Structure formats: C-alpha cells, structure tokens
Image (tube, rainbow, N blue to C red; front, side, top):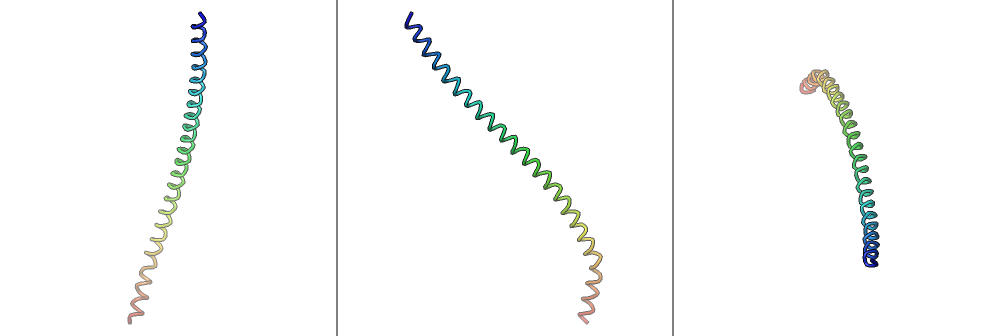
Length: 84
C-alpha cells in the first residue's frame, strides 16, 4: 500500500510540474498572439496612411503636370525668342 501511495504522490508532483509548464507555455503563446495582433493592426494602419498619402501625391502630381502643361507653350516661346 505504501508503494502505491508513494507512486501516487510522485505522479501528483510530476503532474503539478507538467501543469505549470503547460500554463507557462500557454501564457507565452497568448502573449505572442497578442503581440502579433498588435503588429497586424499597426501594419494595417500604416497601409491606410500610405494609401492616403499616395492619393495626395497623385493629386499633387496631376496638379503639377497640369500647371506644367499650361506654361509649356510660354516656355517654348521664350526659347524661340532666345534662339533668335
């Protein structure tokens, strides 16, 4: 009977150790998943900001190209005058 009791106590201790290890592993996994979710949100936010900036840049580019097209004839005229 004592052998069974000792064996049961040893297994109980081993189970407690393994349970603690499992709890720690679960905690690490949970923290890693939380950090990954935070990073994913940061990346999504950065992508949205980049898209907004690209829209602004493209609008400005169109505006500058339009202005350039408007003054291009005057530039060409000035070049002709200088060449004479």
